[in-house]
Image (cartoon, rainbow, N blue to C red; front, side):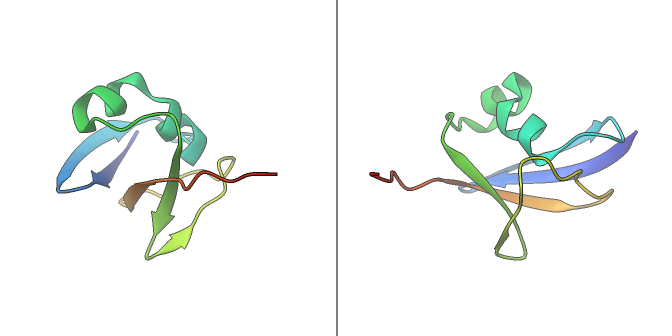
Length: 73
């Protein structure tokens, strides 16, 4: 288990998660969605750099979630 801090807007939560917990797992987590109030279209950033959904979140990381911009193809 490892601790991560997740920020969305002015709210944040620190929670213990599994060692193999990824950015995608975070973005799909009903627990984090309920606690912070974000929707399905988000991007995860560490130090302002967008992270790939398949990447494992490092222990002790502070992740900022932002609403992803809509794109047209």
